[in-house]
Image (cartoon, rainbow, N blue to C red; front, side):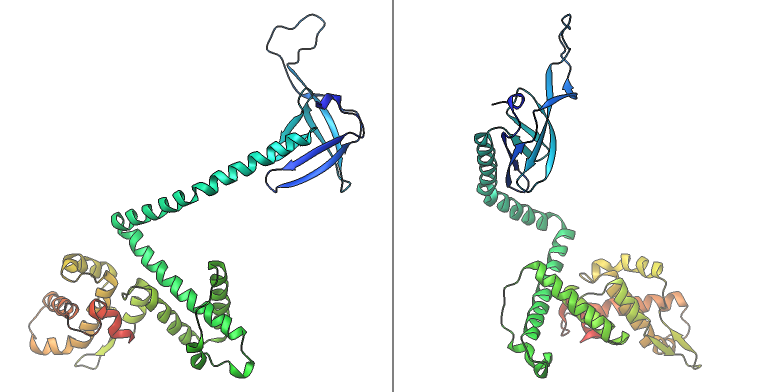
Length: 328
């Protein structure tokens, strides 16, 4: 049967490919011509004949839930499509559509191992070729570890009585649990919100520093370098107070570019913290030892001391000496 042969009360079948939902409806009245939906014939018009290549008809359908909808369909077809919806006079056509969708899904499922291997292979290549990607992978891994621990804590706390909520004591009782990444992120946000509401600003800064210590690869970033440098202060021999920073950001970066090959893997923020520390701790001594030195000569000596300090390979923090010295 085709659409133009439908009569009031005839069944019509509907299948939504997006939601995989099937409905059966009935025609409410005999289909009527839909001139606006018809397409003109490109052949020369015959005298006395309308110039339509295809004729559309309007089919008003009521589904089992009582909802009525009108569809414009080609009158000589038995199946029509409206976005993801399939409309047909024939249940067999709907069955064919369901089978086709199932086969498409099965094809994708069968190819999933290939797609997954492609992602792994590309990640491996990117980690070898792109240092930024490799660093991001390491950071993501540390974040995952932190979220895992936070999620374990959150789940454990939920299972405890109010009288047994000492996380410091009970943390070591927590066993490995399975959780989705979405659950981990939600748990992390909940804990973060709670802490932000109840902790003092200094405590929050300590917490952020602890978290950054996990994910920061043992090196300063601009924020924590700025916090550390601004704590530095000394008095000269005239009891005049001098507060860091003692070098502009531009000057520090300029110096770093000249010495970075000597102090790898320390970044510019590690170097900035150490250079300012060396200046603060040694200014009076250097002035005593080299009273005739100009500021430029003094600066050169401070740079040499900073580089030497960072190149101390037998320190207890390895290649993370700058961060470890100030944060352990």
